[in-house]
Image 1 (tube, rainbow, N blue to C red):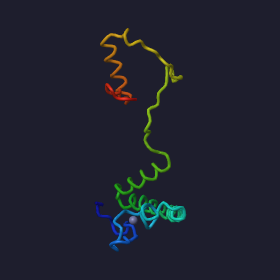
Image 2 (image 1 turned 180 degrees about the vertical axis):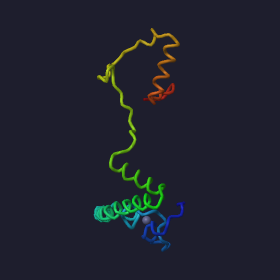
Image 3 (image 1 turned 60 degrees about the vertical axis):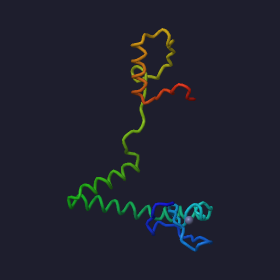
Length: 143
Ligand SMILES: [Zn+2]
């Protein structure tokens, strides 16, 4: 039913019926899975506190990996750790498409009567819409 979980990441609760240890993964920061109480307010609070306590050591570890990697020529780990830090600090590649009108001005709303467009113009318009990542609904599909 569940993929094998690293024992350190396995829920510590035991089944009342079989006595076997739960096979689910622990909720982040908790020692039990969501079924066995990780959603309870006091468990969530403890989990948050445990995770918060790991922030400084994690930053320190990344610092060590970056400095050691650069000094010893292990650039792969240094770059991975650096990217992790940069991503978390907001220096990641943009994931949005920025659109603007002429001369970086506001985008105007254009109404086009499709019946007045030629087939070539409609094909060009579909190409532009696809280029923007907008997928038209399939016939019979709700928006
Ligand atoms: Zn469990």
